[in-house]
Image 1: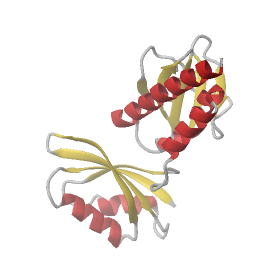
Image 2 (image 1 turned 90 degrees about the vertical axis):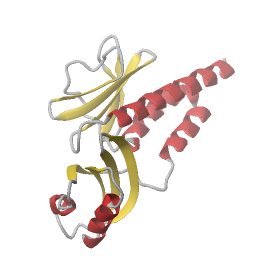
Image 3 (image 1 turned 90 degrees about the horizontal axis):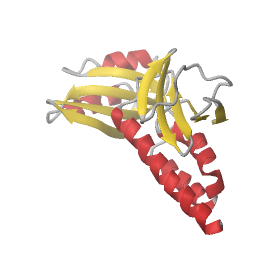
Length: 206
């Protein structure tokens, strides 16, 4: 199985190597490391690992946490397979079918930020316009349409909401940590690029 671990660790030489060795001892193969932040002598990194499942993920969390100064903030399943380019695939689909741009974005974005589902919500009525394949029929959140991009937690869900052309893209996960600002920025950039491609495509066909 693929797991994502969010790890806070001292930002000094050698610590990352110790963490990597701890993963190796547990039989976890590191596939990707994403740096989320580095400040005040600490770093927050997301590790994507291939995990045999011989132990519970909680034990993996405990073993990594024994590295001095290291804290595992969360462990959760992911479908974001390293070595692939789903973000480029999404942009290619949008460029080819601009009239389906926002549908393609809703369907693709959960895998791009290790989330579970996404919906497009009408900014005026709050009604769900389109949902990804794991999205619930009713979205359990009171206010999903803030004026600016925002991340928040409600009803056991971690959510990101980003406005886009009359609707809001809402991305959710119930497992794992709250969305980091780097993840929010990634969603915002995707919305911006998809919006530009969609408008350009529509104007060409008009």
